Amino acid sequence: MSREGAEYALRARAEERDRISGHLLDLESHTTYQLLKGAPLRGLTQRRWAAGQGALTALWTLYDAYRGVLRDAEQLRASRGRLGSEQLAALTGLLAGPSVVLKAAVKPVEQRSLLPEQDERLSLDEAVARMDASFQEVTDVLADVDAVWSAALPRLDAADALLREVIALRRELDAPDTGGPESAAMAVDPGPADVAADVAGDLGPAGVGGELRRMRASVLEDPLGAPPSPQDLDRIDRLLATHRADLEEALRARREYGRRREELAAALDRVRAAESEARLAHGAVVVKIALPARAVPRSRVDALSDELALLDASADDWLARARRLTALEQAARQAADQARATAAAMYGLLGRRDELRGRLGACQAMAVRRGTAEDPEVTRLHERARLLLWTAPCDLTKAAEAVDLYQRAIHGGGR
Image (cartoon, rainbow, N blue to C red; front, side, top):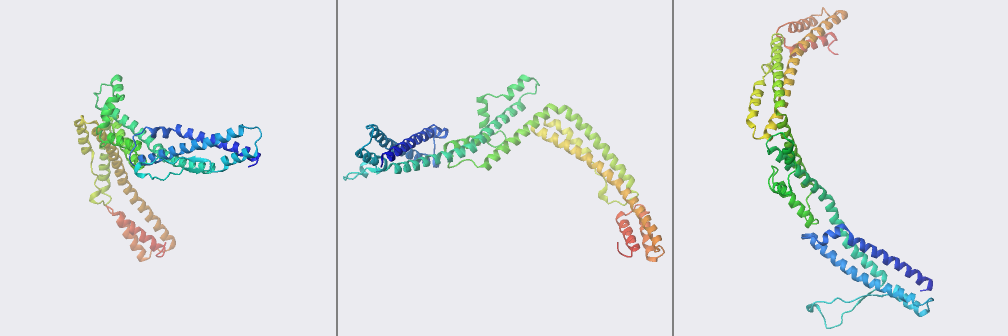
């Protein structure tokens, strides 16, 4: 090397050494690295981390040798203000030659030979390339573990928080309904020991507390081998969310039961009135319009009243009572809507008959204008339609067909 080339190479190597040192320090302070160092790993994660630690040990050994070569080169450069040819040759050997020496590893007796073990010699570039390969092996393990932890642990934390909510709601529902704020606060804020006991229980969702603990252990001990799938986490979320919603609905039903029961009784009165109107409409229409037997309005109010009476029998189970109360409220709304729709449909049949009568009159007027009113076939079709429409009870289907035939006849058989 020339003096300028040696100076430049030495500065570049010093910067390279500082950069490598910074990367190694960052690696050892990395959160995932620190967690893995003390974690009770197993399975695939344990095997990969053991290989990564072996690579890191080899990296540090090589780095110490690499750093020793640079230290010798810097001391050589500092020994003289102006380098002579001998110093340049020595510096060139350190910076460009196979100057990094890796001592042969001491092998177990059963693997030894009586021949001397050869040390390995590498250039600085070769040493850096090998250190980089070891570094990548370690960071690949960290990246893979971190990806699993970043995806699974927040979801498990959220599921644990949701589980605590479910436990608190269950406690509140099981507590006596005193209505006082102190009892509610005690129910909503269970202690750690109580929560742990409840987590171990069934909670309705089968063993969800135990399943969450198994999932967390799997994520922490073998994230690369058997992490929980997104589908399993989704299932846990749905299970807990459903249970929380059920408990919230049960608590709401307990707080509002008196008012909602009164409103339900009033709703049944509205069903009774709507069904009465539907029966009146049927009675008024059936003498004028031919109706099938299934068109007779069916009453649901008696069955709903029986359901209302049975609500009080489920006082010990507010989850079941809340579901029945909500279902009964919905059924009452549907029954009233259906009865009103039935009455409207009945009266609509009379409107349909009147609309057909008006249409027949309009068609007759058109036949007069066209000069076809006296045609025997047209006259026959008109009389048939008129007879159907003015006969009680009226068959609307046949009447509509008859009016349609009469209209087509006026237009010469086509529309």
